[in-house]
Length: 188
Image (cartoon, rainbow, N blue to C red; front, side, top):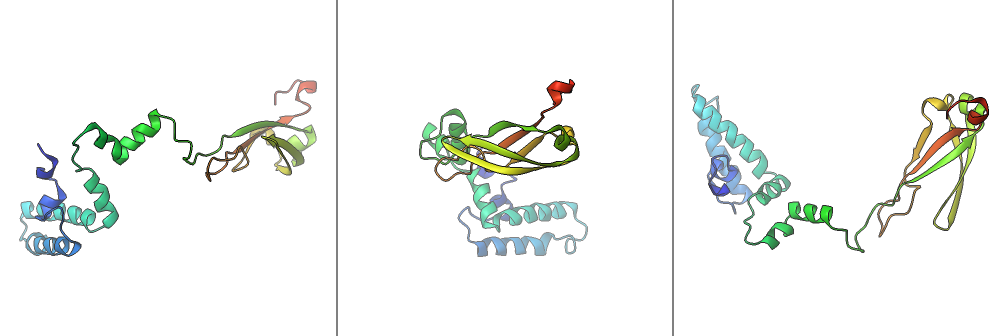
């Protein structure tokens, strides 16, 4: 059955054409509401159901973004090329094929281990962090909370490898490693 003739097709529910204007859609909904609204239909369950479907249809068709999204579900497919020109087809293509060199792409995450003195690892404090991305060196001071061994990872957004063509940089994942863990037999 062609999707344009389904009984749940919002256009059919409101009795308007696919190219109906917002004004046409509003008029059609008001006409149904006057006839089938529970306050006007004398307890007719079928009329109440028609009104409910009309409300749903109007909610979608009166919102331009929702209407565009709804209409995409009814785009005719005339060839295989049509499949790959719509949103779902692009998603399949992007998943299955590498992106074009010009497409923005988030940078890769970077993971480093940072040695932390045992006293700072247990009681909190600061440690210097130094790392290199490509040919660029970075350094800063990291605040370490007390009892870091309970959650020895930190994630700093945007400090990993740079993104491609304006996309955001990856994240810097830091694992805090207790400097005394080897000497005292603890695992960090």
